[in-house]
Image 1 (cartoon, rainbow, N blue to C red):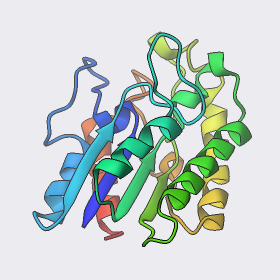
Image 2: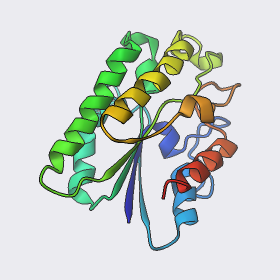
Image 3: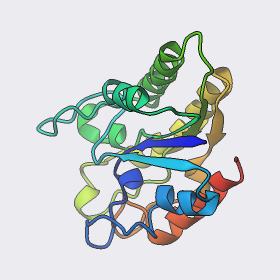
Length: 199
């Protein structure tokens, strides 16, 4: 089974401590790969600043819906785990929870269209966890905490409508409360174990 983990910096594995990439033994996608064993291939496709809706200024092409197709063309995929939405909460984008959710549904529909007439991959949606408006991220993510809570509700509705599996990231996991956005190692381990139960 081939599993594509398509997400942002928390799938890439940015450490909230020093901003560097976490080791392979600490990232949720690589932990999941180890737990599943060698009969499964886990494709790590995390990209810092990746969004569902807009391309961040000065950061190149980071819109998820534009970049996912390349992965689908390059790999045979049985399962797609989508971990996106946190970067869309940035204040400068002025997006509502509904705006972000509509983009998620467009991404899901694009996946289904890509596999039209073929076996559809299983899609797992992970809603954004709690974001703390602190430190360097206080202004960048102003108002994000309330939107993230709303996204957990809206993402669940879309997942149900599109026959996707859903994990409520807001209820299950949390960003580092001191740094605000990125996940501590224990959170990566918790998520990997939760995902393992779906296979």
